[in-house]
Length: 367
Ligand SMILES: [Zn+2]
Image (tube, rainbow, N blue to C red):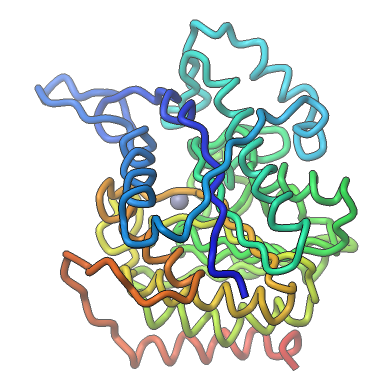
């Protein structure tokens, strides 16, 4: 059983510049104080620092990665789409939507982010009981094969799993607990019977033309992949108990049935109770428990092969602490970092009703 965890990181990811304004929108002419875009380098600087200096630091080994090359990117993304990103002059910024901003030099940084996920994936896959985490930005799970979306350009998880398939991986499972629907990852593997994709997200629905996917339970996969995409739109206000019960009662059984060789966690922390982009209520303990569950499931089903890839998480201080708690759970360590913020209680009666609805919905699949 592994007591150590490999972190893949390159400081260039701090340089991806998404600008500033009115949260993620353009600045208001009425407000004198502008703020950085929520997907900013500060969030990663805090995550990096707490892993370097926090109680878990003694259990981490740090590794660099190489930028994903063209062939690696093309296993998940369309050539025309890569051409479009590559053709943007390194001195220029470009807005793919009002919120998804490609800064100067971002092409190389996005290649590096995907490459860090690939390197972490290779590490986790090569031997038993190997756990790796890619500390990277921009995040990837909204990036579709042919489209930038939701702060994301290359789908770091998608590129990493296709890299492993080129190296002999047959079956994998992705659990995406970022607070938003992992629509890009869903899209990339929608017809695929070998990659089980599960997304737990707040029930936000589709939020515009850039999101043809809705995150609804009806999106179950297509063709050979039918039944291999599972969306769990969590009610707003779901917290530690809801997420962990859904993991135990819905997610873990589905993963066991799939019999993956590797478990991949799209690890966002934006379901935390203070996130400006989320409406969920997870505390550090909730993330700690999720980390423990992911580890136990990987040990049970995948010979301990566990890959975690950073996604969202926008409360600049608390997301970093929630990441620390997640990785402590993954390593089965005692929590060494106290939660400095308050914790809200959950409505357990409403939660029980929701779980029962889910069990009915998936009763055939879980039988
Ligand atoms: Zn998110």
